[in-house]
Image 1 (tube, rainbow, N blue to C red):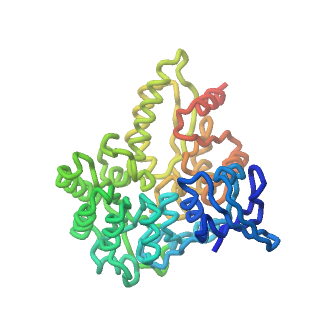
Image 2 (cartoon, helix red, strand yellow):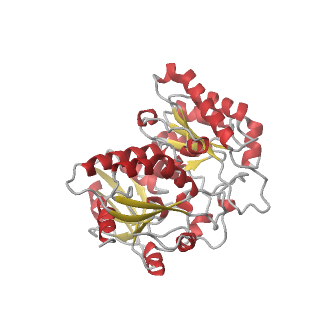
Image 3 (cartoon, helix red, strand yellow):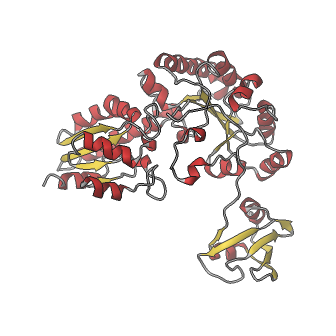
Length: 436
């Protein structure tokens, strides 16, 4: 039980590279959460270390001494997922992707730290106690259904814990919860979905939001259960169901929405996205809830700012997007841009995903290889080539480990990845230069 320092990025002193912090004020340290929890709210603490050479050290020092050392700790060993969900995206991954894409976690610490969704199916009493004691809130929980029989089918195994009992205990312990349901037509939709909405709302306000997301199916489902996508008609029905449920819940929520449908439902159903105020604090943004509304409103704000300039934007650009993004751009975004900025010529290239299968339509899962093929089929880009912001990871790589710079050399054209949208100043500047 300890946390190892693998690097000192700041001032080395009492803390050194290779040290293991084994206790703080006499309390054993098992991971970084223990360390920071026992350090919180105090100016100094008694640190007990094991040196890399086998020696031991113990000293009461100021907490800021550790902060000045800027240590890099060894990676936490995360808790693996033991479920066998019938729709699990990891099980549908094609071969040859980066190694981390095949890992399944079900770790409450990662849920608290990074918003990862967890099942709580295998949460232990000790872990429940720790969550409440450390106030690891909010947690993000994949519920999918509250009906036990349906849960067994979805998760592909008997349930060790009753989800409503676990969530109720967390709620009583002061833990906030954001829940999600991945809807599988014919499995957890209809009456099952309505029950799940009602059951989870009994935990409001501890259960703060519920996001409903359509199942994602790739072309790599050999040997997996046969499932189908949500249809346009079903998307409309579920949007209406969420609206009716929110109408029932309004009195208790004080006018705030509880159930949120992901953006894909509105695109499938050809419905207008709710206004920004409906999404509140956009707490389910990582689930694709409200992204489109933020994008559309951000484009409108950007246009208003550009209109105040003496020289309006000019030039040509080609935007890369997936099939879902193409619907958003053609129906909701480009009509606004074309009317307001007529000097800007924008071409849209919709990329079909051959890596994951045509049914995968989100831009974030487009590979460099598919983009290259689509641009070549289109006869090359007009002006600069602009990729979606979510297409690269923190290392600047696409899903198949290709960097935009590599694609740039291959296609012989300028490629940019915006931070937020294609009307950023550096994009427009490069666009203007491309026609000189």
